[in-house]
Image (cartoon, rainbow, N blue to C red; front, top):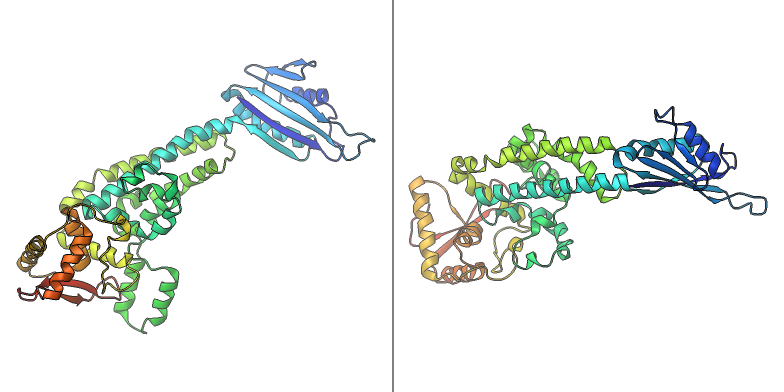
Length: 414
């Protein structure tokens, strides 16, 4: 393992002016470093301690003939990780102490080794959170809800679409195009229906004075997922741990330097995060079994409203943005469309409340049953034109825009 640096004496006043003198100065530090006095090989310019060596090579020597050339030395340490890790900083500090300026680190294979070990943790941690979020949204709220929950990040994620071209031809890989910071942010930063800054400013300006209901609704929109869906993660200080681990992740991404204490702390944070995610992952099935159908429907409508950029009044016959283009499975028939609509209407009639959101019915209910979006929208338009179904609006609890609902024209209004 190698650690090397290049040091310059720009003033010509450093305490050591040649390689042997610099070696002697390092040799004299042995007692202060609590090391045995090393052997000096003047022929090779090397000091040898137990388990590691230090070599000094003079690159240039200042002279009157070449006044622009300053003294410079390459200092190279080779040895075991355990020996070199604590010596790297001592070497740099010693060079500056004797008057060398500037000092540049050329190679640090100790940091490289630490970064390599920590990178595996970054990869595993991202995968573990990605797995948890995908299971949470898709198992509890429906097959297509994970990409919809991450829809606000879709544009940014598309910038990395070319990073993987094999699996993405067959599977939805948006989760693998979300950055480390954004992936954690889905838990503690992003709100399902949070408006962007410009929209928020417009809403605040248009808020009538003293309108407590509108203010409460706006506050609800600003509430992050941390408060609504991931309270277990919040109780475990997920945000603090994730952001701390992001510090080490960024050091790896930017090829920065590491010390042993970095690895020790990163290992501790990594273990806590993995355990925290695992604990909450075990609760997914429990949440699913206890969640009321009405709560699930409300979130589905909320997610659809959040993903829409215009009022949900003129649905497109195309497949939704978050699941890609084209047909997914099999085309639906008129009879199947009406039968599925009637099934839900019967359930709502028994409960005495509720409505059938148009987008939710076509893009999630029918989609989850294996029917493609294109044929479903086409059948919807045909049945609407024939008067077999009716379309109406319901004021949304999550948006200024009304939600679009449908019902069979032959059934009484719900």
